[in-house]
Image (cartoon, rainbow, N blue to C red):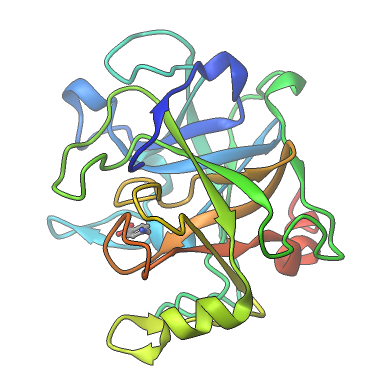
Amino acid sequence: VIGGQTVKVTDSPWAVAVASRDRFGGMRAGQFCGGVVVAPTKVVTAAHCLGRDVLGVPLDEVRDLKVVAGRGELRGTGGREIAVRRTWVNPSYEPLSNSGDLAVLTLSAALPEEYVIRLAPADGGLTDPGTAATVYGWGDTTGGGAYASSLRSAKVRVLSDEACTRAYPGNVDGTYLPATMLCAGDPEGGHDACQGDSGGPLVARGRLIGLVSWGSGCGQAESPGVYTRISALARALEGQL
Ligand code: 4AZ
């Protein structure tokens, strides 16, 4: 997260770390993406967080995945580490465009009900242009690879589909697809998601409206962050809960 501040995980317990049990260990508990608790045994994340080869080893090996919940400081030992029992990748996910960038992790143990966040309404409410939203994550804080060890958040605003399309018209930076994506940023720049935040929450009025998905660089006013549009995928998602 660029331009944000540290938050207490007890204030946002639905923000969890998606991590490897065996790899990228040490100080960061294996964290490589964000996730969001949407039911006691269900965590949503970005589809693009799974199935990637890292150092020649595919990351979709379910037995290698865990979720770290209730631990704001990754170097600490608080909260719980829970193994992932099953993964589901949205069947309409398109890796080339990043359309439908959503996966569901089924946990091997249940989290308390207090960890669960409500989804955005399926009618697209809370995604009107100008809506104030907050993004959370342990990702890059500078755009230069300085990953956070404590959970951070930054305030952004939902942009219109027209503004998102102007930013990403289908050039080398990518294509904004309004049916399955929303974009949000800071008109002055400086507040954004970044690498390592992928799969983590974008929250408006206490409801989950997006998952960090992609963007060109981080924190630049002309290149807003692009998020999986939760309301568009609510039906596919409800079927998994
Ligand atoms: C990434 O590489 C990434 N500024 C995530 C979010 C954004 C850019 C890159 C948005 O995972």
